[in-house]
Length: 461
Image (cartoon, rainbow, N blue to C red; front, side):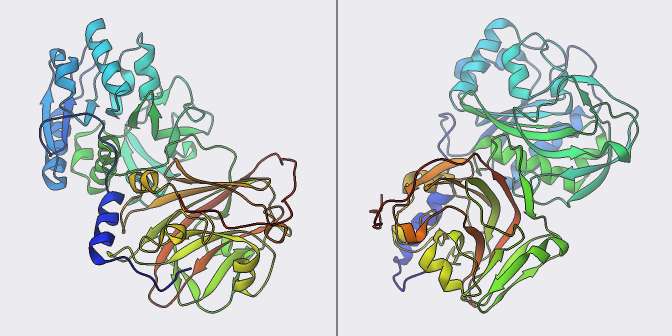
């Protein structure tokens, strides 16, 4: 939804700029982001390390960050590490840091630093528990190099947003000593039926991210072969992980378990959805739905009843460079072919970067503004994917943007009760193009209590 009010061009530009910026991980003297590539080995040494170092340097040149490379563990001092936004462990093996160097790196991560682990980074520092938690899992074994199907589980993270849903590639596929799924956010996994030698019982994460002890961590099991570093798809995957670790982009890297798909990117999954009002959504080959025309809404009717307490997650992206596209996610409304029924009887979580605070991205439209400082730090710019989690428990509604809680609202209006309501996505108008993908839900235990006798719009923060 939108009013006719507009910020000035200068204010809009500032808002969009803020949406691109994350809190600085570390302090360093230049405005240019800086990455340290560390490739010391105390065990097996991969002959692809030079290609890996060269690839990260080239990615830095194209993306605008400076890259230093070393195999000297003496670089791991508190003072030196403060110069870097992220440290890449590029196929390191064995015990590569002494206790003092380990303490310096722990302090760096706790202070907001970034970590990228590539391939044999999981074959490193087995006796250092902090590092094991940061990497996410330790190497156990691997079969022969062979092709396998990689299943992309998160299409919004910058490391996987450019990949197909099933990515067939050739590499050396690690088995890990433990499954990290309960501790990290899995970005991609292996289909063990597509190759021989997988030992993880059909649930085989291969790339993941997490927020760990104050820092950001990304790990990819790819990268054994020299050819990997010349592959545009792998280079894009690696660059996305670097951008996340640096803090260039935000992503929801909380562990995610127990969700079921409402829309999985296929035409078949749209059979349970209904269009209310004018306009429509177009399904593209990459599994995204893009709004067209309006004012209308596509809502999920497959459950046969509304949802009570739940966590709804979905990925969304604005098309226009101005950030002025408009859409939203509706919750808590009764079934209807009239989209205005959702407006009058439910709540909209807004997508629109250029309206007044209580009607802009992250707001409960017309009722409560998002925390704008948190929203601006968490928001990725137009053209980049964002992830919403809308968590409804009883009459309590919370909004998370890329893993950051930006809104907290409690309904007090019986006519807008959040219990047993529907969920839907808005197509706002002819000039508004917003895309959605990977709509999933996890039902939560219900909470007692009923809405109060009256509801009033909350003041914007």
